[in-house]
Length: 345
Ligand SMILES: [Zn+2]
Image 1 (cartoon, rainbow, N blue to C red):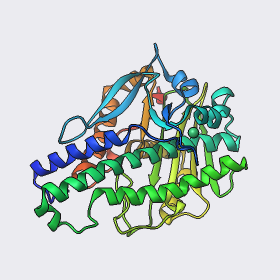
Image 2: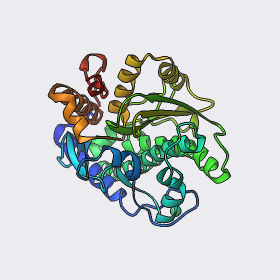
Image 3: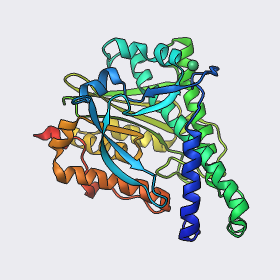
Image 4: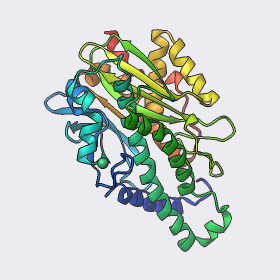
């Protein structure tokens, strides 16, 4: 994006975010072959994690605000439990039918269906997010063609953000289909592999990330976008990770396809081979770098202290800002943004 002048860039970003916002409305249910209108559903369950985290009906959510034309502003905001982490993913019928097993019963970390459903929500949210971004990208591409023909001629036809998102949506759709088939067949885990770990920590925060990791050379960035030329429809490039607080402990779940890229395997092996300390650092980084949603209990957020809070917000802000500016992503190890820090009392 540095190739544009700053005025052109901020105008294009305004068009992109307006289109993205419009694309977020009036979505169809993400359940296969359902054309009904989607209503707002929680990415992190209200009955369950959000309920455990809430204080006086509120949680703290980390949000990137794109209202300003130029760069996103990241904030930790107090949000009501009804609005926290919602997105229009499913119609009322499927929202109830698909998720009732983890809404109505206590979550069982050993139950394959429960693990699958937790990850499915994160995949569905990512799918919705990328489709909305496609709508924004389409508007931006149209504006480039009509209003900035000189910019347009300086770009290759493929070097347009909507194409990148469309390719990511295609790759993600094939991963989502693996979940859809499991839901339809009622079988236990099929082609998906799961990893779980219970951490001895009371409810502190919840979140999920659906991470796009094509093999080296085909490229990715913080938005999980593929290189424009990549057309492959493959579920192999994705890793999902969920942090799910329960009454007395916190459950970590990861999921991938049985055949996956070496970058997915590398992350998977890091997760499964990590010591407790390494795992905390590692999960903190994945959540802050790639997480679509991150909510905290207000007491837990408070107990992290100002220094950790500032480090967490600053790292998250740098990731969002650098993605927009096309800059190299910040390094994690020195930043002291450990989401688990408050459990060390
Ligand atoms: Zn539906």
